[in-house]
Length: 160
Image (cartoon, rainbow, N blue to C red; front, side, top):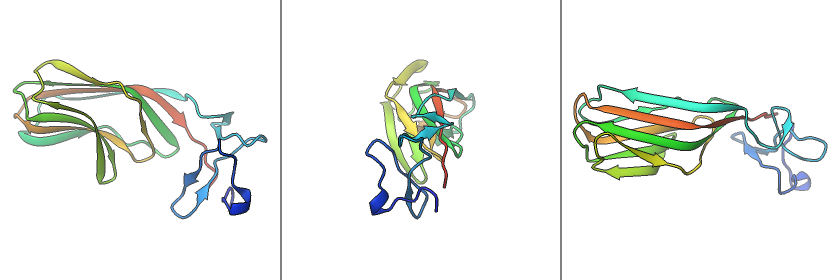
């Protein structure tokens, strides 16, 4: 199989490996062993990422709003996230990276102030199938949420 990694052909330490469910494989490389993304050496910018999630009528209680999932062949780098809740203050709000059934909280604000933006400026790297989730604990019926994600997309060229 193409680019299958065996003990005698481990790529240099600068080449990332991808797992296809059964084997680790190296992405397509140029003649110098450098990983290629969209035919260019190295990992880099393909397009800007700007996602807006607005819900002006949230349900009462616990709820969440999801971004779309990262499609095959892409990696998303979110460089800034902003969230705002308007209405009666819920117990807390979370901004999470959702990976299958697991999640990782990147921002939590207890009793958020109405109309106040909360920011996450850490770079968040999402791979195929991952998504961003805004979670509300104890929301009030018909309150509003505003969630924004900005960053960039990298196209990843795989050979397996």
